[in-house]
Image (cartoon, rainbow, N blue to C red; front, top):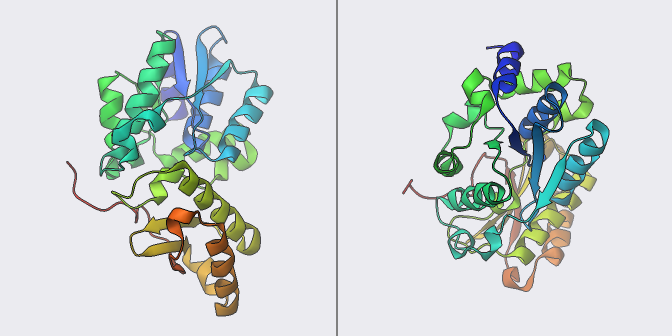
Length: 266
């Protein structure tokens, strides 16, 4: 499918509200929808919480100013949901239920998400929550995958946004059934920023596991980082951990997508 198919779909919609996380998918959808439709027809909704890296919110606000979005920043309330905090296998269901439910309580517009066809290759309980709230996914309806999203972003002149690495919420770094805690998430983000400054890896994830803390890097960056440098960074990372993680070992490993997810689908 083509960008033209996506544009035709967006033009066919009534007043809409785009859930914008700050990643390339939702950001590209928001830019395109805003350029195609009048500001009266599309509103951007961005949720902030301890699980959302501050740079994602900064990115949303930056592009909102450039593109002239009607933007509403909100608290989806997932950190008041015990089901979410318990971090079960389907944690994302509770996250998205809170997000879409909050948006639906603020507007009667059609909610749009940035899910693309590549998302169908993974377990995505958030899509179940979207179905319950009758959220529409323009990329899915137009048959568009991540590669095509990046091409659209490039064609729209979005610069570095087109090459923005994937960065799921900070809670995705916490192994299933370890309770989600804001202080822990802040430490995870701090460790990733530390490693990013020193090694400039293509991908970095700070995983909290029952067995300890693992800093995952793409294979190329891991190979370039010497043992002495990794040891120094492990010590610096350990100093950033909250009391709940005191004494946990910190080690490096190769990045694996979704490696904090453990368990079968409910």
